[in-house]
Amino acid sequence: MKVKCIKIVSPITNEDLGNKGIGLCVGNDYTVLVFTMMSNSGSQVVLRNEDNHNVGVYSLDLFDIVDGTLSRYWKMFRDDLGYTLCPEEWTGLDFWEKLEENYREEMEIFEYFVEKIESE
Image 1 (cartoon, helix red, strand yellow):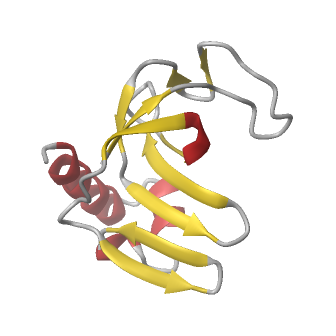
Image 2 (cartoon, one colour):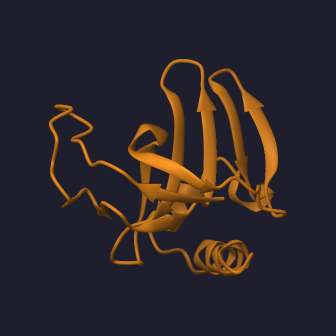
């Protein structure tokens, strides 16, 4: 799934931030790594920021979908808050925390699937 950034707004104040900010640039395309549909907050996407190193969670409202093809590496998971599409290996209880803390195994798993998803 690919999206194009159409606007950038502050997640706190909802203020228009212009053409750059919060790791995004209006007009640029991004590969969706994780797609969530939450009952209380709408749809969100996880993608690599402009620096191509960090990831961010963004409201789908900031994007147009330019390619709606779902990744073959995604599986659907449901919990009390809604649905998530992502690689099964990313769904462990502490996967994202360990990734943020640069645990080697989680970083390797993450990079492996990012490469696969981005090459689709």
